Amino acid sequence: MDTKKLLALAGISLMLTSCSINNYGNYPVRTPYPSGNTGNAASTEREYNELIKTYKPETAEVLSDLLNNDDPGNPRTSISVENKSPCNMVLTISGNNFFKKIPIGAGKIGYTMVLKNQNYRLSGTLCNSSYQSTKFITSSYAIKLSN
Image (cartoon, rainbow, N blue to C red; front, top):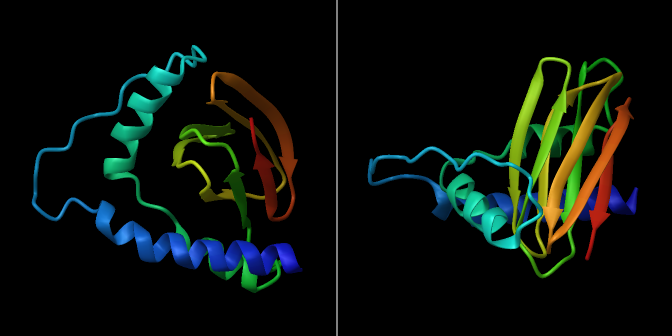
């Protein structure tokens, strides 16, 4: 339960700091670089910088999920990934009819909501190291990644 409180506090701080990410000036938004997941820190950094310009975190939904102790009546739950490395990363989560790229800064937490009782593939590059995992998600799921 302490981990959920920590994630909730981290989510609130992310929500407060993400206000500066919005495109308030109506500037044209460029599309993200395609990811070949080459394990190259420079290409990961480019992709991260492009994604962070337009990424909209699901802060309210994730916090609600964590604070409501993973309501069994809710068909969705949260995935949280803490990036404990000195490198920015892009986490790709894919599953049945689901695909999302989440930019996660060094020392930050990235999160999203997914449908319960499904397999999801999590992958990304962290400081030139490749991360890949497949998880069957039934309730909120949190992991910490470091190099």
